[in-house]
Structure formats: C-alpha cells, structure tokens
View: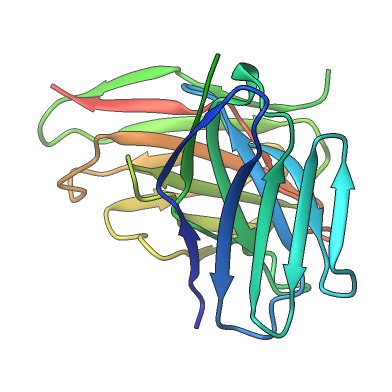
Length: 112
Length: 112
C-alpha cells in the first residue's frame, strides 16, 4: 500500500521527442506527488509537483498528468533535449507524514 | 548560500570498521533524512528526524545509527553490522510544514 511503482526503468528518446514516465500507487491517502531529477553523481532536485485537486500541471516543457480514479500520474517532457538525460523519480506522500515514498527511478537518455 | 552539504564525497570503509557520514544544512529546516541509493532500486529511507533529539527508523535502518543533537546536523554512522554498505548515501531536509525535500550532493561509500 505504501509503494509507488514507476515505469519504464529506462527510456531512450530522440531529441525533440516527447518523454513519458509513468507512476502508479495504491494508497488513496497520498496527497502530494513530486517528481525529482537526478544527474549522475549528484543529489536529486525537485522538478515539479502536483496535488490531487488538479489533473494537470505544466512548468515549461515539463507536465504532470494526474488520474485520481486510476491512481496514476505521469511526467511528460516535451521537446526533449540531451540536457534532460538524467534519472527521474516519482514520489508520493501523505500530508503531514514527512515521509516520501519513491518510485524505482527511470533512466532517461535523449539522443541528439 | 543556503543548502545542504555532505562530506566526504567519497569514503572508504575497511572490514569491521564504523564510519560516519556528515550532513549539515543551513536552511533552518526542522526535518532531516538519510537515504541509501543502489542502482535500479531508487531511494530507500534509512532514518529521519523531525526535531532535535528525536529520530525514527526508516525502511532499512539495520546496521546504521544516527544522532540529532543540533538542528543543522544529522550525521549517519554505518556500523560494522551493515554487511553490504557499498552505496550512494543522500541526506535531505524539509520544512516541517511542507513536503518538498531538498537533497545534498551525496557521499559514495566503498568497501576496501
């Protein structure tokens, strides 16, 4: 119930294409869903986050789509660039719980 | 500059040795966390602390110990009881009122 399942494990996209990473959860008490971006040898950094009262949130080329009934959320990277090559983690938490549950990560490679 | 610092960047442990990883933050955050990252397994929570002089076990606390004597500092000791310590260790902090966690640059622990 506390798990967040992320797919795919790795993804290769051509420059200019759309990268899509999916996450699914079981615990309906989760109410905060952030995405983190991690470059090799560095710590993860918050990319974008959403709460379940909205179905979509967009920041630049990055969009989170949220489907509450399906208990799924996804990250879309439009016009993917080689600089987007990194590992992406979805996560979820319950308000006030102070703990994040992370997905397994997706290694994204953007080919030039 | 506000942020989280971790030291050392690389740490080598000999058999039977305890080693301590440092984590310091100047963000005035109440909560601090330690994660372990292994390839393909995402981030796993070792310990977390919501306030000075208090901390809780995460999902993989065995073989690790922590202390929280100051708000700014949350050192992690990898004890000799941890039989497979080779990993990338990440420290994070968050404001008690928000879920966003900010990560340090990490420490890579290797066994000699």
